[in-house]
Image 1 (tube, rainbow, N blue to C red):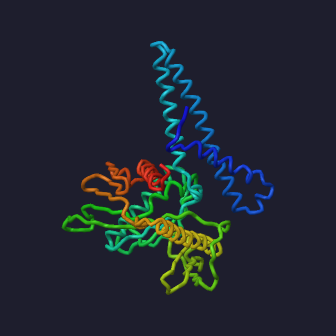
Image 2 (tube, helix red, strand yellow; image 1 turned 180 degrees about the horizontal axis):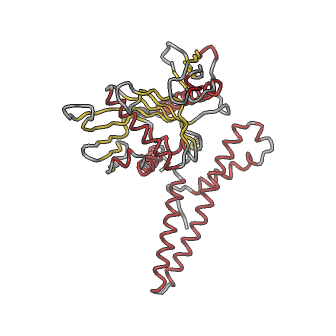
Image 3 (cartoon, one colour; image 1 turned 120 degrees about the horizontal axis):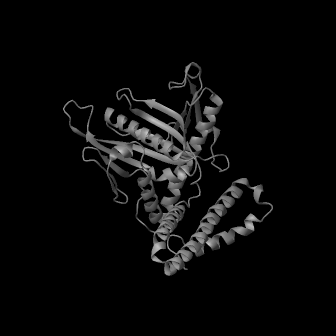
Length: 354
């Protein structure tokens, strides 16, 4: 029963076979970063291949049963067919997670665009959407920093979160980009239609197992009193940490963490975010160089507009794949699974894996 295309079984079996010498090497764990990478890839490949072998057997058996079944048995076989189709859909979704960092926690940074109150309110709506999505998926959200808007009651000037759980980065990576809101503004006394923008950046949490070169001389580290929620013990101690990388240069990155009352832990978390931001910058540069080397003119649009939420006309449009979705209120309440799966399919095709 030959299969190819999205499953690419021959390539997967060959790749798993190629990993066997490394897996059997007694010195593999001398390099823990490499060992984790090799074992995680082998585990992913084995899972897909095992599931496919089981599914192939189920399909062959179901075909045989349909050929010999009498009229009274067809309803029962239809139930079995539905189960097999569900297993096939699950297996297909497994093929969408092939990234090296898909299993890692995701760091989300949400910022409003130009537009003052309108954009700050929109950024706050996106923050709520992702927190509700994480709750629906059983993911854990750790708030690193939130700066509330001075003009929008539920708005933000910036928010930074770490989302932990099964394939957190693998799921959320397709949400990176600019999100556009069109609505009749609740802040406009004349009930005019406004357009607002907010950016969402998603990067994997990069720990010490991945070598990111950071010179201490490139860092300025400030400590200050937390201004966020957390109780008296947080707000009365200098526990918040701000790290500025290469201050005053075009490469400057500012990371703030005021998650708890421990200055040491906040510093560790801020450094993890900085490593992740530097990793993302290097990945962007590497991809741009790959395209240039191949003579391709396609831009790497990491910050491009990916989605529009048009509330007065009751639809959401994904600009990458053309998908149209209705009931935007449900989407903004965190029901974004269908958008994310569609985004993953689009991403697999764009990467040449579809």
